[in-house]
Image 1 (cartoon, rainbow, N blue to C red):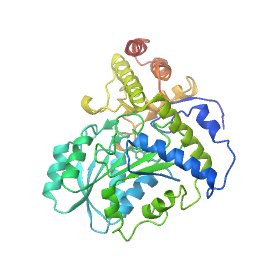
Image 2: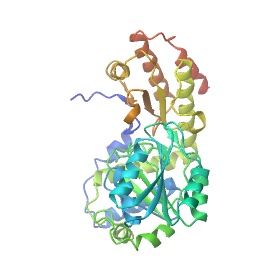
Image 3: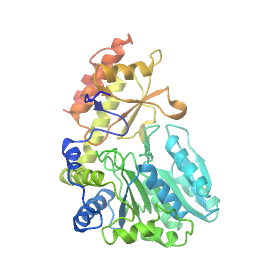
Image 4: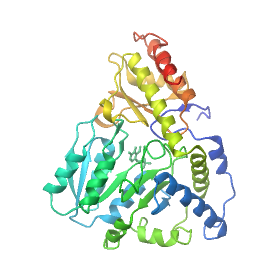
Amino acid sequence: MSEERRLIMLPGPTNVPDRVMRAMLKPIINHHGPDFELLHESITHNLKYVFQTQQNAYVLTSSSTGAIECAVGNIVNPGDKVIIPVLGVFSERLKDKIVRHQGKPVEIPVKWGEAPTAEQIERAIKKEKNVKAVAVVYNETSTGVTVRDLPEIGKITKENDVLLLVDAVSIIGGDYLSVDDWNVDLCAIGSQKCLACPPGLAAISVSQEAWETIKNVAGRPYYFDLISIRDYAAKNDTPFTPALPLFYALDEALKMIREEGLEARFKRHETCAKAFYVAFEALGLKPYPSEKVRSNTVVAINAPSGVDGAKVRKLMKEHYKVEIAGGAGKIKQLIFRIGCMGTVSEAETMATVSAFENALKDLNYPVEIGAGVEAAHKVFR
Ligand code: PLP
């Protein structure tokens, strides 16, 4: 296996600053003791800032899927109706989790590349009686779509006494999300995307309204029982052994976010995303999602016809040392996806655009070399 460094422009995991990697070298400590209490307190404090919440937030030793499963498993009783817009691979998976926990998903099918609207959600709540929750993937990583109506959806769920569960895995720390202002009851996230932390940790925020439901769910998972997690967290402890090196890394990554400030961080992501979109358009390629719902953290672009996408990616990775992703699910072969996440800046953006157009040229695609770079460059000036 090569230890050669490449630019990781995947929609997760993403590049991790050396400062965060080095933090993992700290000594192992007793996780039931004063040193861990301080670490836990520091992480929780900064995590609440990232979630923009005054309510509870917990770190989980698992990948992001654990936090989503935790959210579903703690609020769904058998037969409970959960409205779920399905707009790609990750919202389909969220629906599967509702089924696995014996809930009754009420699916709102959404054309891939589009996002559900607040009106659709409102109509579904009114039509179905006794809806327990609405579950939304805020940033659908498989299509590069952000559900821009999320704040409106939160108003509607609040008015109707319905819980709002959000998968913000591929967007938290990279674009606006205010758990408290947007009335998000359970928000599930992961460490390895816009937080610029290694993979392996997840986190969840829980609202007061959610606790009222959680205490009445008898079939709560054992490992992800939020009541037990809450009781341990009150003592800055965890019910099970935490992945200590990753906790150190998350602590450092969250400190870096604090230092930069969320507003500046969102702006940086937005500017880089804009540069990507204009660069690809200059190369004659269209974004996969419709314009209004394009993500600032996952840039999805229709692959040019007549070029083997896998070859483009291989060349970019092996020759230009930049790794991007192909599609997922039914559009696997049809698009490229670029993670515009975490540490992304002008340098990474320009290197990626340059590698992309060079690879196309190498594969004899009729591209005007430099067109993408020039368009992207203007966005940064
Ligand atoms: N949800 C979304 C929107 C994602 O993008 C991903 C991973 O890419 C997941 C859930 C699953 O995350 P993990 O693989 O960390 O469990």
